Length: 161
Image (cartoon, rainbow, N blue to C red; front, side, top):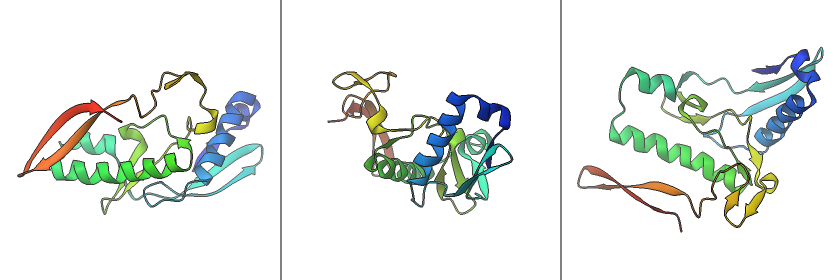
């Protein structure tokens, strides 16, 4: 459950951001995105009721011990599936970090916290391929490509094209 207090709701900018989060999250129904069940107003507070994820954050999990390569690939595949789904629906998360990635006891990833997510149509470009808030478009973004060959994992840096 995520709640915006009456005091915070009085801040028009904060309240609009919370309502945008609700609208954006409500548009995403994917097994690797924590489900938004409902949103409502209760006594001058806006409440978002999300799926209860029985598990832990990726941040807590990696503090416990390093993850083996196969587990990393298993989680990465699910995270990328959720992000691809969101991007196909025009949503840019903008806050991907271990604390916003939950893992169920069965190993299923649940992406959370769409608080600063924006519909792609609201991203303002200053020039081709460069967003106003300095998030590069995927075309210019550097990324690590991982190959699994002969039981060895290697990382090669490249450009998305």
